[in-house]
Image (cartoon, rainbow, N blue to C red; front, side):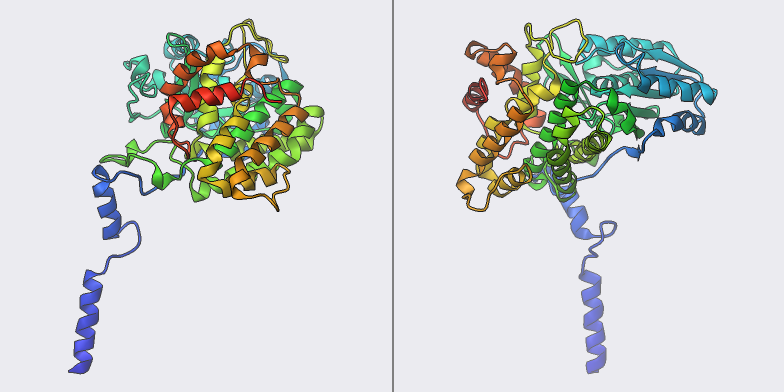
Length: 465
């Protein structure tokens, strides 16, 4: 009898115990169901494009398009790149493999809603079944938007644009395959479901963020980075640096609110720091520390330039799922309100503060501000970038990382703060106003902030040295 009682007791325990695997766990289903009342999220999701890396790997793209059964391909680039080796190598591969294609080379460096709409109009006129983007983040982001709206021809432009500027509707329809061939080592756009542009009516940057628009494949060919001028390599590298730093120090995913209601499709692409993104972001930071200065100073240093190309991918996977925060949120009005500044190394017919530069100019002030919330991570980042932290107190983490960044930027001849790109203290209210709509990223700051905090951060960034 005693033996049968023990067996019966065990069976009752098994019947009431919850299986711990996600497919069957009662606790898993309860968590999902209670998202309507939870104040913070309980899960994170990793998404990234497939990536193919290798010297000369662009030669394979024609075969990829054949394998996809492509009949009419849209290839997007910009006028500067259209006659350079990266585009030539891709076109040669398409011709060699008998791929039918049309070229759109009117992409704007630092795209706007108007330039997006021009590319969308081009895409809608043809029945393209595959898209190919050859260029930096501006080209890849423009191609993402063209693919999205060509596949949703009845959508209003603001339907998928991030709130509060747009409606932020989820993307539920299928898109065409998109192959991205990055030519800069910075944006990581070949890995992410994000497309950024200047919204001209408000003179502020915004974008579209959805896993649905990420490229099907990123072809990362380090040969293409050899065509980058030194300042383009520097500004692209600063984007990698800040992608890595911001995603590593972002608000943890389980502290982000609100929890997505009812359906995981509502979980944002930028979810907060998490254990998987941390690995990619921290590794990217190590690569930046080792190779970025070499990549800027010697354009023929294949080891350094190819390493930075990979660092861009690593950081892209990290921030593409964790997100960025204040440096990027504040960068958008810096780039969007540019007056007369011209950027060395960029052949454009309009004033320009390159994206990577607009991001990095606030980085010393930002990380000095955010450090109290996660000093260990800020000290870790400072050590990776070369600081001796053995005697540093946690309370000094922000100052140490800020000083480390200033030295790094000084060594790479970065302009001396916002004043050097045409801003003054009188512009601070407009810069703050342009940051406020960037809640999608600024809310991932580990430290809460007010408009007054933003004003002080912009003021502290007027001069770096």
